[in-house]
Structures are given as C-alpha cells and as structure tokens.
Picture 1: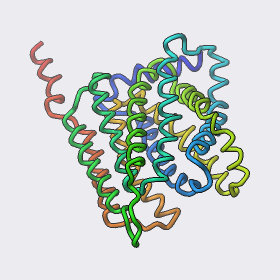
Picture 2: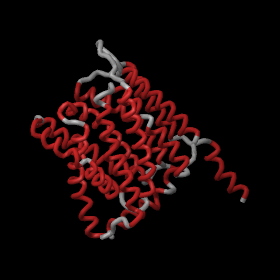
Picture 3: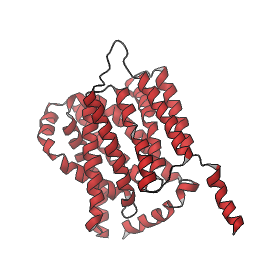
Picture 4: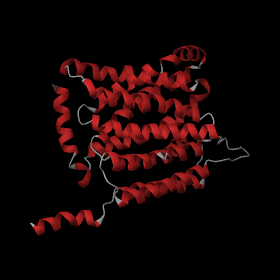
Length: 327
C-alpha cells in the first residue's frame, strides 16, 4: 500500500506540472541522471579494454539488479501489487530494447567509432524521442522544443568535431559502428515512448528494476564471457564495473524514470544533450583530459539549446487568458 500511495500523488501532480514548471525534486532527478550517465562514458572508456560488449552489459545489469532489488523487493512484498496481463508487454519491450539491446549495441559501437562520432550519433536520440512523443504521446511539436533541439544538436556536433582525430590519430568511423550507434539511438528512443505510460501505473524504481531484470535475462548468454573476463580483469576494472551497475544504471535510470513521470518525454530527452559536455568536464577533472576549444564551445551551445527547449511560445501563454475572456 505504501508503494501505491506514494505513486498516485506524484502522478496526479505530474500532469499539470510540465506546462507550468517542474518541482525541485524533478529537476534534481534530471541533474543526477545527466551527471551519472555522463560518468558512465568515462567509466566505460576506462574498463572497456577488459570487458567485451555483452559481458560488460551483463555485469552492469547484474549489479544494478541486486542493488535496486534491495529497495524494490520489500516494497513489492508490502504492496503485493505486480503488473498484470498486458501491463507486462511494455516492460518486456523496454527491458529488451533499452537495458539489453541499447547497451550491447553502444558498447560494441564504441569499439569501432571515435568518441566524437559516437556522441554525435547517439544524440540523434532526443530528436527521435521528440518526434515520436509528438505523434504517439500527443505531446505536440512545440516550436521552442524543436528550435532548442536543433541548437543543442549543433553543440554536440561541435563537441564531436573537437574530439575527432588529433595527434595524428585516424578516425574509426566505419559503417558497422555507425549502424550500431544509430541502432542504439533508435532502441533508446522507442523505449522512452514505451516506458512513459508504464510510469502512470507503477513507481519509477519498480519500473526500472523490472526492466533491468528483463535485460539481465536477455544477456545471460554472455555469462561465460563475464566470468572469464572477471577472472582476468584487474581490481580497478572490477570496481569500475560495480560503479557502472550502481550509479549510472540502478540510480540514474531510476531518477530518469522519476523525471519522465513528471516531464514530457520530448522535453526530458532534450536534457540528455547535456551529457556530452558533462562527460568532457568529468574527463577533465578525473582523467586530466583537457577539452578542446570546440568541445568547450559545443558544451555552451548545448546549454543554450536545452535552455531554449524550456521556453514556451507566446500563443500557449496567451491562449488561457483569451479563453477566459471569451467565457
């Protein structure tokens, strides 16, 4: 019962919130998601040589399943409320596509693409989400959302330009890597659209944990690889894998789901344009990787673009007043 009562007030507050603003807790959830997802790129870069794409995904999901399960399972025991019948279909959908397919495809793509190209291709995702949310979730196509998304995407392109071939290194943007990155972007975008209605029925932590469990089951064929690679990996790589499971997966996907229950999918997806710039900042602080001028400029452009997505047109502001006058 505690789980149900904590969800419904949030859901009832979620519907009027997007037009007028988002609660401080919702904004905090967005910021946590952006920072932790950005740190994931740094973590994957650090431990990538020790784990193959499938085993890295399985290890990350397994850790997240245990950690988040410690929070979710007591809630489920108390409420005894599980999704029923057709409610499982969207959960299975985003569990397979996002937690399973997206992560494997992205990990594999990063073995073939330079970081800048990967960041540019993955950030097709917010545009896809905005289009699909306008069509399937009937969120419409707000002018400032489209303008801001285009500006932010331009910022990501500048970041990609700045992280391209340097010091004589050659870009590794081959066709297979491009396809894998675009596949990951499509899987993530479709998953956001599928997950949004689920969050009207179950809490964010439960929706995330169910998806993680589905993704974990899908990745079980990589268990042999994971065991052998864990045995050969240094302690630092194993700790890095644990970090990816706890923070960018268990915590960040839950804060994302919570924010998605409060904010239109298109507007929330636009905030992920901040991830590449935040990744550059984290790499600068932790790995002493000095960002290029293009990277810094691109980060600022991304901030401006995301800020523009939060604006509302004058027509939307004036329409309630006009309707009130007519009545």
